[in-house]
Length: 407
Image 1 (cartoon, rainbow, N blue to C red):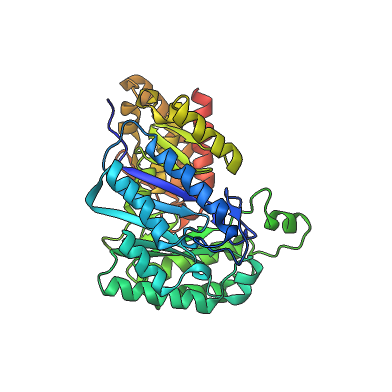
Image 2: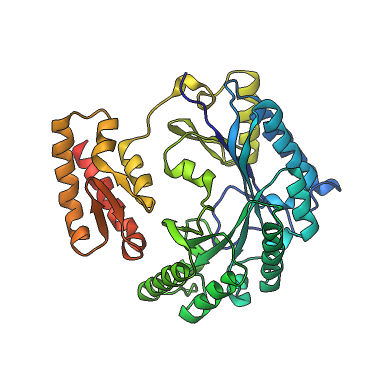
């Protein structure tokens, strides 16, 4: 039997309301919903019942070294509900000593007492979805919280880390939102550094189909930083965070030593993981599988696969290697990059095929290497920081075009 996954992602799809940039599989439940009491929480409890059913349906279980509870807004749930999810893994899979257990929290649904409740339930790392410290930016992005909520949450998490109640925490910001000009973005970064988060994720805004932002953009009403302003923001990010002791270990992620996200490195290193919940992606045996994004369809899927016939994504005999282009894409996102020839060999190519295809790829990449976007040390290729990482899309697109041509 192939090595069993050591990581699990759990999707909690509930949000008070959908943000203007969000295209995730979420269920808006309104501003007044409570997670434990009241009739309005029935959809939450029904979902948790089905989610637990899916988690328990796995036949080939092994102990976990990372668990990531994401959303949506997991902090809508009560600490008791989070504790029940972690307990199911502990009893039925096992949780390794020193495991990283991360939970996403939102400043609008997060209190200090909740934090200690989640810690008691087993969470030892938090990811705070701040997105910005600028009230105008937050409002234009459809966020429910304000800057003061972010600052309070950061203070609580910093205090918990300094008191050794948690191992680490991460602060998430979105670059190039409305009103995110150079000065406002510097304001966001400086505010973030006031709280010394061990890990910072900086995501570039992508305007997705079906979002409020897409409708505003199509109507000419969405005013975002232009390409030149966006690049200056990115350069500022890299400069300020490097000067503050952070390493950019992945395109969107920075950390101080010892605080990289162990769970996310599972994805980037192409390792296997379980994915549970509506709309979640699972890759336990190499090939990726996605759960239905609709709540009713997801419920039907879980009932069928657990009571009638296990879905192929849950059976170890479904093992299928990741495609080579995806391996290269994931490796190039990391600071250390990827050993191209070694990856070719692992793909089963002989020396002659490897040499021919390597020469074709490097010929395409030569123009990026000439201007310092791609660097190499022997057969290991990696993106320069910040230039290469900021222009990674066009570099990776050229790799995918290479892949299509040789196939």
